[in-house]
Image 1: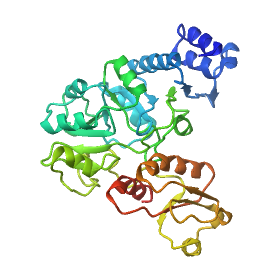
Image 2 (image 1 turned 60 degrees about the horizontal axis):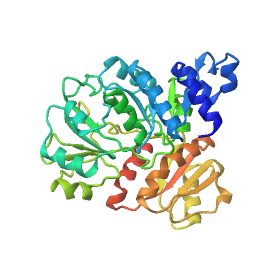
Image 3 (image 1 turned 30 degrees about the vertical axis):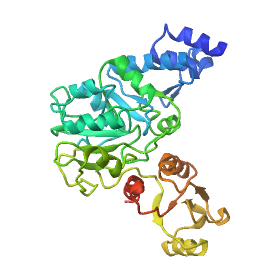
Image 4 (image 1 turned 180 degrees about the horizontal axis):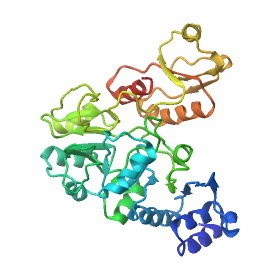
Length: 377
């Protein structure tokens, strides 16, 4: 760590969370006695974690705010989450307020051990043990009967709760420091594109929360797989990068139900609403034989080419006629890691229309199909 960072860490230990974070990012403003605001609203503090000392300082600040009942944006390996104490109904209610989240949409509870997960639920079947051994820590959420410790607001009034042990080292450290589980949906306004880096969070919630922790880009890039273990056989409620084949290898059986569960009330999983993960621009999923065919299809829809951004993986058009052309590899994990960032970039550059090249219709692409279908709804 360089001298500047050592001095800042040393000074920050004696200050409040907001003052400490301002020192890291606005040292001149701090020493002038001024803190950044926009129209009287505080700008979210963004704390770095790129050295061991900064990592530890950010853990302390995040844990202090969470213990005080404040929501904090934290990195996870899937997407960035807006976290609050899962055992504190008032703290969780602030998540719904900040996001504009509908009250009937439940929130996943994040834990730092199997023991903590078991305290959140009343039953822990053999399937839960097997899945936890295979996929935790990682992007798998298990839905189980909730314990009395989990407030109604977390479960949207339902009898179940989704629990997940995330793999990202920072959120693991924060949960361990707090010694309570964290309720954490994606750190964005409801139905908008999920954030996969700290700047995405700042753009959407920067004037609504006090702290964003920058843990680098999310390495998975889409939300976790959700499996309901209250049914026999287990059922996938939301697809993710842990696919059906991997789950079957552990469970031996799996109900192949319709992914969308929007008609089930109360909802048992987030990501079940018909419109979700959506950019500001209108999103279309098209298949084209060549560039001429793509231009013709866009023309039929009445979309101006210069306001149309194209995201392709195989048939890549020339960038000359379009507002932007982006290329993501035709590989499911790489595509999942990049797609939300590309959608954010299209919105930032003022796209009116986003055209995504149709994806392969194979099992490993199911989760990305799900996200794009809801984004286009």
